[in-house]
Length: 176
Image 1 (spheres, rainbow, N blue to C red):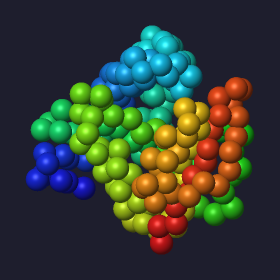
Image 2: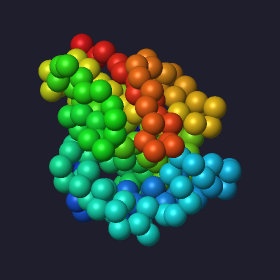
Image 3: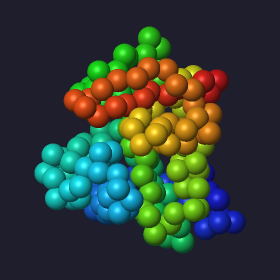
Image 4: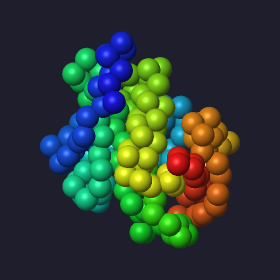
Protein backbone atom coordinates (compact mmCIF):
# COMPACT_ATOMS: atom_id res chain seq x y z
CA UNK A 1 0.00 0.00 0.00
CA UNK A 2 1.50 3.30 -1.02
CA UNK A 3 0.20 6.75 -0.24
CA UNK A 4 2.69 8.65 -2.31
CA UNK A 5 0.61 11.82 -2.13
CA UNK A 6 1.64 12.01 1.53
CA UNK A 7 5.06 10.41 1.08
CA UNK A 8 4.03 7.19 2.88
CA UNK A 9 5.17 3.76 1.72
CA UNK A 10 4.19 0.56 3.52
CA UNK A 11 6.65 -2.26 3.01
CA UNK A 12 7.22 -5.66 4.50
CA UNK A 13 9.58 -5.66 7.44
CA UNK A 14 11.97 -8.12 8.97
CA UNK A 15 14.73 -8.65 11.53
CA UNK A 16 16.85 -5.85 10.06
CA UNK A 17 14.14 -3.39 11.15
CA UNK A 18 14.59 -4.21 14.86
CA UNK A 19 16.71 -1.11 15.64
CA UNK A 20 14.15 1.20 14.00
CA UNK A 21 11.19 -0.49 15.73
CA UNK A 22 12.95 -0.35 19.10
CA UNK A 23 13.66 3.36 18.54
CA UNK A 24 9.94 3.90 17.80
CA UNK A 25 9.01 2.08 21.00
CA UNK A 26 11.57 4.04 23.01
CA UNK A 27 10.16 7.31 21.66
CA UNK A 28 6.63 6.18 22.54
CA UNK A 29 7.64 5.27 26.11
CA UNK A 30 9.32 8.68 26.58
CA UNK A 31 6.30 10.48 25.09
CA UNK A 32 3.84 8.61 27.32
CA UNK A 33 6.00 9.15 30.42
CA UNK A 34 6.22 12.89 29.66
CA UNK A 35 2.41 12.92 29.82
CA UNK A 36 2.23 11.01 33.09
CA UNK A 37 1.47 7.58 31.60
CA UNK A 38 3.91 5.18 33.23
CA UNK A 39 1.53 2.22 33.32
CA UNK A 40 1.04 1.31 29.67
CA UNK A 41 4.63 0.43 28.74
CA UNK A 42 6.47 1.36 31.93
CA UNK A 43 9.33 3.81 32.27
CA UNK A 44 12.30 1.86 30.90
CA UNK A 45 13.03 2.13 27.17
CA UNK A 46 12.36 -1.11 25.28
CA UNK A 47 15.92 -1.12 23.96
CA UNK A 48 17.23 -1.31 27.55
CA UNK A 49 15.19 -4.43 28.38
CA UNK A 50 16.68 -7.69 27.03
CA UNK A 51 13.30 -9.46 27.21
CA UNK A 52 11.65 -6.70 25.14
CA UNK A 53 14.50 -6.71 22.61
CA UNK A 54 14.07 -10.49 22.27
CA UNK A 55 10.28 -10.05 21.93
CA UNK A 56 10.70 -7.56 19.07
CA UNK A 57 13.24 -9.83 17.34
CA UNK A 58 10.76 -12.71 17.65
CA UNK A 59 7.86 -10.58 16.39
CA UNK A 60 9.87 -9.46 13.35
CA UNK A 61 10.99 -13.02 12.59
CA UNK A 62 7.94 -15.17 13.34
CA UNK A 63 5.10 -12.88 12.23
CA UNK A 64 4.20 -10.48 9.41
CA UNK A 65 5.85 -7.12 10.10
CA UNK A 66 5.10 -3.97 8.12
CA UNK A 67 6.95 -0.69 8.20
CA UNK A 68 5.43 2.64 7.18
CA UNK A 69 8.11 4.90 5.75
CA UNK A 70 7.76 8.64 5.34
CA UNK A 71 10.06 9.92 2.63
CA UNK A 72 12.24 6.82 3.09
CA UNK A 73 12.44 6.99 6.91
CA UNK A 74 10.84 4.25 9.05
CA UNK A 75 8.07 6.09 10.87
CA UNK A 76 5.65 3.42 12.14
CA UNK A 77 5.47 -0.34 12.49
CA UNK A 78 2.81 -3.01 12.72
CA UNK A 79 3.13 -6.73 13.31
CA UNK A 80 0.39 -9.16 12.31
CA UNK A 81 0.24 -12.63 13.80
CA UNK A 82 -2.13 -15.56 13.53
CA UNK A 83 -3.37 -15.08 17.10
CA UNK A 84 -2.72 -13.26 20.37
CA UNK A 85 0.50 -13.44 22.32
CA UNK A 86 0.27 -16.81 24.11
CA UNK A 87 1.40 -15.19 27.39
CA UNK A 88 -1.91 -13.33 27.59
CA UNK A 89 -5.12 -14.84 28.94
CA UNK A 90 -7.07 -14.10 25.78
CA UNK A 91 -9.63 -16.53 24.40
CA UNK A 92 -8.45 -18.04 21.14
CA UNK A 93 -10.69 -17.43 18.16
CA UNK A 94 -12.68 -20.41 16.90
CA UNK A 95 -11.76 -19.49 13.31
CA UNK A 96 -8.65 -18.32 11.46
CA UNK A 97 -7.68 -14.77 12.31
CA UNK A 98 -5.06 -12.10 11.86
CA UNK A 99 -4.02 -10.41 15.07
CA UNK A 100 -2.31 -7.05 15.46
CA UNK A 101 0.53 -7.89 17.83
CA UNK A 102 2.20 -4.47 17.68
CA UNK A 103 1.31 -1.01 16.40
CA UNK A 104 3.67 1.88 17.12
CA UNK A 105 4.74 5.12 15.51
CA UNK A 106 7.74 7.32 15.98
CA UNK A 107 6.51 10.42 17.79
CA UNK A 108 8.41 12.62 15.32
CA UNK A 109 5.71 11.66 12.80
CA UNK A 110 2.69 12.28 15.04
CA UNK A 111 -0.39 13.63 13.30
CA UNK A 112 0.21 11.79 10.02
CA UNK A 113 -2.38 9.06 10.78
CA UNK A 114 0.21 6.33 10.34
CA UNK A 115 -1.53 4.04 12.85
CA UNK A 116 -4.79 4.33 10.93
CA UNK A 117 -2.95 3.76 7.65
CA UNK A 118 -1.29 0.61 8.98
CA UNK A 119 -4.58 -0.71 10.37
CA UNK A 120 -6.20 -0.18 6.96
CA UNK A 121 -3.30 -2.19 5.54
CA UNK A 122 -3.99 -4.91 8.14
CA UNK A 123 -7.58 -5.12 6.86
CA UNK A 124 -6.28 -5.53 3.29
CA UNK A 125 -3.74 -8.16 4.31
CA UNK A 126 -6.37 -10.08 6.27
CA UNK A 127 -8.72 -10.11 3.27
CA UNK A 128 -5.88 -11.04 0.90
CA UNK A 129 -5.17 -14.06 3.12
CA UNK A 130 -8.82 -15.14 2.86
CA UNK A 131 -9.31 -14.54 6.58
CA UNK A 132 -12.42 -12.78 7.87
CA UNK A 133 -11.45 -11.87 11.44
CA UNK A 134 -8.95 -9.20 12.49
CA UNK A 135 -8.34 -8.71 16.21
CA UNK A 136 -6.15 -6.55 18.40
CA UNK A 137 -5.59 -6.09 22.11
CA UNK A 138 -4.54 -2.91 23.82
CA UNK A 139 -4.06 -1.19 27.14
CA UNK A 140 -7.46 -0.30 28.56
CA UNK A 141 -6.24 2.12 31.25
CA UNK A 142 -5.93 5.87 30.97
CA UNK A 143 -9.65 6.38 30.58
CA UNK A 144 -9.82 3.99 27.61
CA UNK A 145 -8.40 6.44 25.05
CA UNK A 146 -6.55 3.71 23.16
CA UNK A 147 -9.64 1.51 23.11
CA UNK A 148 -11.58 4.45 21.63
CA UNK A 149 -8.89 4.89 18.96
CA UNK A 150 -9.39 1.28 17.83
CA UNK A 151 -13.16 1.69 17.87
CA UNK A 152 -12.77 4.67 15.52
CA UNK A 153 -10.85 2.31 13.20
CA UNK A 154 -13.84 -0.05 12.96
CA UNK A 155 -13.06 -2.44 15.80
CA UNK A 156 -15.62 -3.56 18.42
CA UNK A 157 -14.85 -4.51 22.02
CA UNK A 158 -15.04 -8.24 22.70
CA UNK A 159 -13.35 -9.20 25.98
CA UNK A 160 -11.42 -7.55 28.78
CA UNK A 161 -8.45 -9.20 30.49
CA UNK A 162 -5.72 -8.56 33.03
CA UNK A 163 -2.02 -9.25 32.51
CA UNK A 164 -0.90 -8.99 36.12
CA UNK A 165 -2.36 -5.62 37.05
CA UNK A 166 -2.25 -4.33 33.46
CA UNK A 167 -5.84 -3.88 32.13
CA UNK A 168 -6.34 -5.01 28.56
CA UNK A 169 -9.12 -4.95 26.01
CA UNK A 170 -9.54 -7.21 22.98
CA UNK A 171 -11.27 -5.73 19.96
CA UNK A 172 -12.36 -7.40 16.71
CA UNK A 173 -13.33 -6.41 13.20
CA UNK A 174 -14.98 -8.48 10.51
CA UNK A 175 -13.25 -7.86 7.21
CA UNK A 176 -14.94 -10.21 4.81
